Each structure stands twice: as C-alpha cells, then as structure tokens.
Length: 491
Image 1 (cartoon, rainbow, N blue to C red):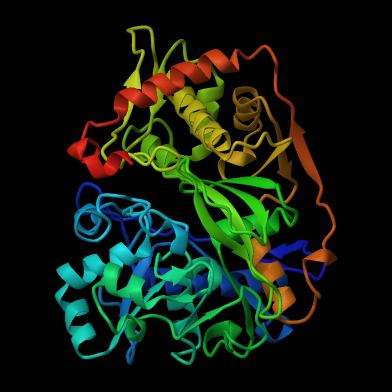
Image 2: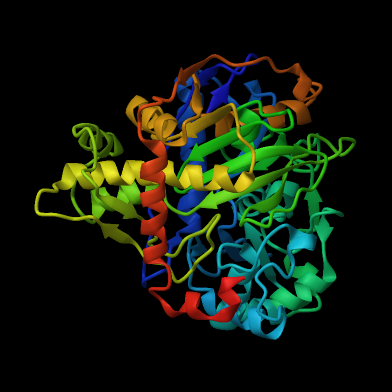
C-alpha cells in the first residue's frame, strides 16, 4: 500500500499466499512465494499510482509474527518451508521443555519473556527445525544458518544480505528476547534452542520499530535505493494504525486469527489469566518502549477459509458472512472452532473443534452464523480476562468490514465497537513507523483522531445467557486430545 503524507491511501495491490497443510496440525508457506509477492505488489502499487521508487520517502515492513524461517546466510536460499504461527507440530518440543526445564509450569519464563511455553512461539519452531530437518542441522554445524521471522527474511533479501536484523515487536515473540533488556538472552537461547551459541543463528540486532538507518536500503526491484525506516509485527502495527497511543486503549484485529491488544504504557503488566505481556512499540532508540497485554486467538479468517475450502459453503468470505446474516439466530447451535487447540485465554492445546446443539432443523446458514458468533465470543473471552471494562473496542481486519459481524460483536460483548474508515490499519502502522523513522513525523503525538463508524450494543440481545452457554461449549471441547490431560497443561 502506498500512503501520502497525510496517510491517505494512494494505491494498493495484494496477492494471496498459499498455505500448505502437509500433515494434520502442520501449516507451511513457500518463502520464495512470499518474497515474490512483495516485489509484484510493489510494482503494481507504484504503477497504479504513477510513481517510481525514487518518489518514496521510506518503506515500512509489517509481517505475520511468529512464522519462522531458516535460510542460508550466504545464498539466501530457504532451507525449509516457512512454519506458520498456528502450526502445532512443536507440541513435543514444548512437552520436553515443560518436563525437563520448566517443572511442568507453562509460565516458567513469563517474567523474562511475557510469554508461556506453547507451540505458538518461534523458539520452539526453530528447535523443531534443528531436531527434524537435516539441511537446517547441517547449516547450524557449518555456521551458515540464519533463523528469523518473516520481517528478518524480507529485510535480508531486500537488502541482499546487508542487514540481518529484527525489531522489538517481532523479537519479543520468539521467546528468546528478555522483555526488560530488549536483547537476546543467553539462558533462554540455551534452555529453549539447546545451543550455547544461539546468537550466531539469530539476527545481529534488535532495533526499534522506527530507525533512520538500521534497516538499510533496498537493493533490488522497483524499490531499489529506497530506505527501510520501519519494521513492526502485524498486531502491534494495527495498534499503532488504530492510534492506540494512550494507556488503556484497546484494539482487536480480525486476521488469520484474532488479536486483542491493550496499551499498558511504559510498564510491563503480567497476567495470571492467560494473557501475554509484549512490546507494543518503540518509535526510535531514544524513546522508551511501550508495552501491551495481548490475547491471541487462533481462529478468525482461518475459520471462514475452512468453510469455503473444506465445506464449500461459498467462494468468498463475503458469501460466508452473507450466509450468516440470512438467519436471525443460530437456534441454539454453538461452534467452538478449536481446530488446533485453544489459545488465549484458555491455552488448552488438546482442545478440538466442537459443534453442539445440532438438530435436524439446522442448516448451513446456522453454522455460518455460529462461526461469526464464535469469533465474537472469543473476543469477549479475552476482554473478560483483561479485567478492564473498555468503553470502546477498536476493530480492523477482514471480518471487521462486515456491518453485520460488528453489530453481533457489539451485542455479544455489550460494548461499543469502533471501526475506522481506513480498515487497513496494519499497513497504516508500518507507514507511521517508517514515517517517524525517516524524520517525516517527530513521533506519535503528531497524529490526529481518525474517522470511524460506531456500532452500539443492543441491551436486549440476551448476551449474558448466550455467553454462559458459550463457556459451557468451550468446557466440553477441552481434553479431547491427551495434552490437556497432562498435569503440566493445567497450570
């Protein structure tokens, strides 16, 4: 997306990237397809705007966090497919660490990292590659291995290997960075990766989200010569794009999954109710980092995609939403889409999807609505765990485009829902980070409130009764796989 100096969209282009599911619970992407899509999108967006690379002040990168890659530090060749954030093949790795390092406590490293031991985080994906991929193992032995999340790989390739770096919002999601020092931690690398020289295969620098020179200059394609001045993980980028710069402001992004973040200011706040502590943003090396509490839910767009590709309920997300809005209720049907377990705030990796309340009356329309309601109930689960009653839930992402879905969210959460006019807040956050890094803006205080649409809750929506039934459905899907029956998973 190309933005002008007032953050208005000038042009855009997007390409869907294929997900591969070679085994149950596995999820891959082709790294070459990722980098190719960046070049094609840049070409198309610039052409649409009638611009050239030299017309751009700066470029910012935002990316899907936790998704992990391994590549050769000399050639840039990927050594394996990218392992997606919701891939859960690393359960065995996590179980071993729980048993041998963490005394069965998933929160063992919480004070250092803000996170819990779970297949979600990049360290366990790296460890799996080391234990199961011969090319990665040899690259480690030969000291030619680069590990990284998507932004590290993109920056490395775009700068032709001149910059092997990451940013604070992505590094904190690996579980290898100390949340207090904002640096890689020796003990974490040894305990989680199993290597004393873990830093050799990790980005050499952890940078602020805005930086005038640390990310380098693009060395190839239509963007050649343009400085990279910002990098920020997608969910923190949406927080920035939503202008949640004040303590207590909350946003929810409906993407592949669903991610709620609340700004906690300069203090690290730890949760005892299944939420994660994370870096919200750091706009320059002279600025203190801001922190957030996060609730990460695995299923949002993935659930809609499943209805399209596996059930054949439609050919586009819009068709699924239209199907859901064609009935006025689920008629007692509840759907918990725990395809690969439940994430925040429940953290039950052995849970599996459940549909309960089926009768011979129900049709695909009711199932589609049950999925939309499930997305809204999962949002409420996280808000309840925050123990803060927000006046507004700011929303963005694919599902947020639907007036119907956002009204359902307002009704089931009994909270005002605010949707910005420009729904592409993730890209907007990267543009803000790059603009600050380039010196175009001095900092976050330069940004005004954005235009938005609000959805007010219907007090007659029977939200308490419906939410109680939802929680009962959640309780019944837990423990289907044996992981939840292990003592370590019940902390």
